[in-house]
Length: 280
Image (tube, rainbow, N blue to C red; front, side):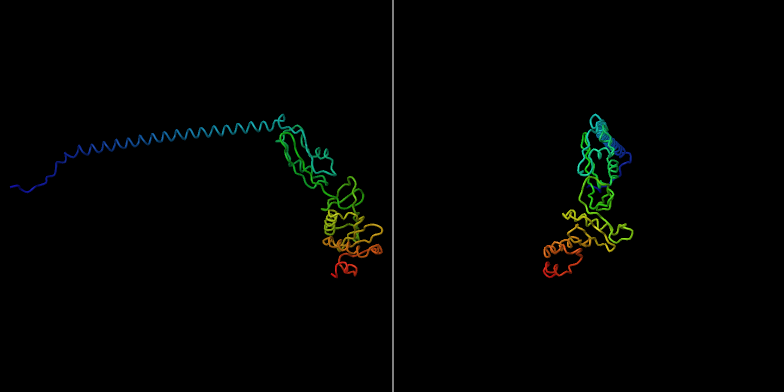
């Protein structure tokens, strides 16, 4: 007969060899992992070193190329100024404009201060604006915008639409600008500015046959076309409509228009004008 099975605990000494084996396996595993990590780190460091070195070489090449290009750009033999091209002048002399710019002949275009050149030219009252451009390798272009005179002040002086007084240059058919009823004959800017703007626009539209323009205290402008024609009284802000009225009125009156010494075109109140405008 088989008796009951009894489980006995193995002596503690019998488990020691198994525990030591596991510890050694774990240590070997850790060493292997550390070795793999070191290898990966070394490979990554090597890759990064190659990238850093390549980047440094590229930067060095760029710096060297830039230095070479700057040397070429600043070498008068390759980029020295040998020509100044002046455009847009009508009253100005191109040679005088080039000389007044202060640009240095023979100096590299890269070292030319175009801002200062522009500032020097704008001192001339005839020059309204200047655009400067480098035209490599040896040329600078100056594009000039001149002021246009709209009236004659007398004593060798003209005046532009922006109120700038210009020394007379050449010939031009301009109305003589005077004060109508302003005390002392000196026109304040508040009166003068709109009158000059209107005269400039009249000139651009082809109304250039006025011999004299008088400015009055209320802002009105009297346009004198000379003997045999009536003086025309207009408002600067409404000059286009006023001169259209004059055309219609002259067509209506014919030769009888010369009988009038002055015609007020600031409104359409006369009978002949009303008929010409269809009863307006």
